[in-house]
Length: 348
Image (cartoon, rainbow, N blue to C red; front, side, top):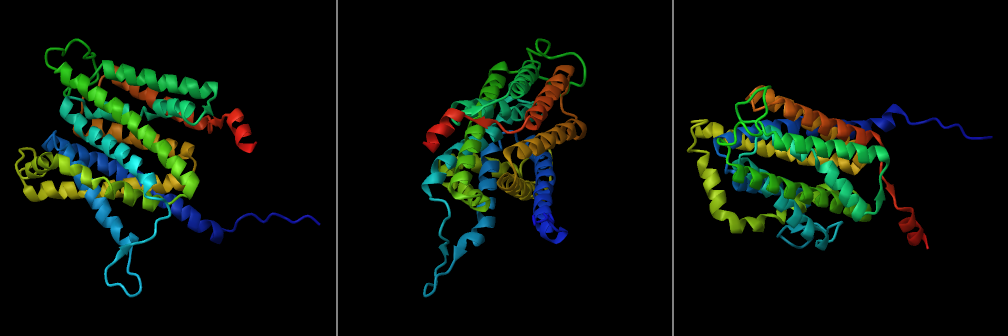
């Protein structure tokens, strides 16, 4: 007699559902709050990028450290617990992630509006697809290729018709504000964002490969990626010092206590955001993760326009729609397929 599949009981499913909902709460709560306070800090000092990145790396490292310490029997000095993933796996990831984070936080000083930054970062899909095709030998459907074309066109449109800081829905600023905008700085900022986008896509592929090989040890990834990044800031010490001192010498928020409170809120929300993304990516497919992050970025864009009154025009609106629509279409198209020829060679 065939066995009847009784499914999964509520008691058995509850921990998984709770885990999943906590990851979503971290992303929508932590990441959205992080964008809000991040913009507040940039308004205080557009060149705070290095200090902000260092503070984030240090805070997440110190917060995660107790989890990875233990005191062996007979020793009074705590030591790091044995790693599930070899240290060599993190070295290249650290260089890539640190570079991407620094470039991201430097961009605002190069005349790039926050609204455009959010749209531009949402275009990681196109870069990920290209790298997936070239490096991972994945095969993409016609719908997925079309969705990436939409995303790419949307980013190009939003980049060319850059809104000015005070512009609302209306005429584009492609040529009208040419005398008011330092196009050299703006072009440098776009180049920095493009480089950061490519590095972030590479980091995502490296993480995916590491999780597949050693298991989804996302807490270990968060700790070592941030801890091993700290020595890099020895070369940026003066820039970090300048950024931290500016918190007590800015005209946007005269209160030093409030300035450092905003920095602290940024650090806590960054921790929640990073942990949420890593937790979700270790428990669901990259398709589900990308869909959640696309929705989160759309919410951040709308909030940035509404709360801060950031520049906006019709072209940015159309570009944003194409980026988010393309991202959603790609996600709903399913997972890209591995190259059958590669799979056959692995079997043989």
